[in-house]
Amino acid sequence: MRDGATFHLDLDRPTSTYLTDIPSTGGKGTMSLPAFHAHTVRQLLSHTGCVADYPDKTVPGIADRTTHYATAMSAVRDIWNVGLVTKMSDAGFPEDAPNDGACIIGKTWSYSTPAFTFVAAVLESVTGRAIHRLLQEEIFAPHGLSSMRMKYAASTLPPNDNRASLYDDDNKKVDPANNSWRAFGGGMETDVVDLARFGWKVLDGWILSPEARDNRLWRRVDTIDPGPDYALGWGVPHDTDRGRIAEHPGMSTGGRSLLRIYRDHGLVIAILSNRKNHPVDDVVTLAERIGDRVPR
Image (cartoon, rainbow, N blue to C red; front, side):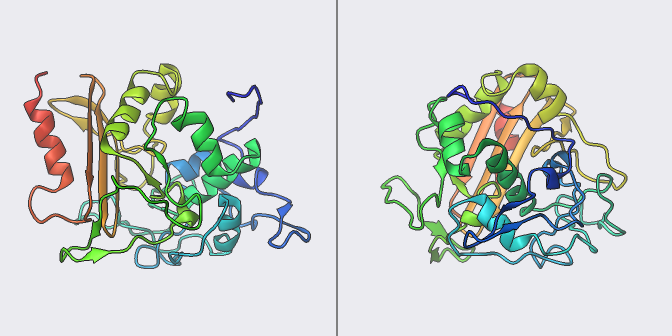
């Protein structure tokens, strides 16, 4: 790390390796990840760990939380007793291709936002830093991403004159909710310039080496179900005209985002919206149209 400290994280070791004998809530005794969580960190990152998503997406489901969590470790302790998926998520699949069948760790793709709470807790375990501090000190500040931050690093949202108001699909203003429990699953905020700058720094090898980026981060994960083209936290579809793409979408009530990188053309497109759905020219369509208009 930038202060000279070192740590070792093996993506192919069981997640339980990093979440064993951690201090319990209240500081008395220790707790460990339940044994049924037999996934690895890589499987969490690629949505092949069979971790539950929200109750309307998978069975069982992990309910949203608005309690403030100072660390991902404290959040993961509140969700890790929910069993692994018995009915998988259809998220990311075409409407005519439901994701039926049994969820098999490492072999089937079932989208899970809470899986990334486990990832954040693992990073806290190996680095000894709260996730908001780790991100700020290792990525945001060193790379000049001044607007990028964990939204609820504190229990209240700090004032920001540049923060857009949030609206539901009826264009009614909605209040933001504390989502500190899922810092890695929609718990960040940024302006669109820094989002694009982040994409460029990943593409240009500033944040990860080109070797790690291409052979780990953006390497497609094979699954036995007809899952989407997905790598580690990124979609990696292939466009007939534009070649290789790496992208990451996000959505929640009052917000929508898309970071799309046309890898073979050095093109980064970042889109932010302050409502979730758009009946005309949604963010994916907009990104495609921008991509079509930029000279190859």
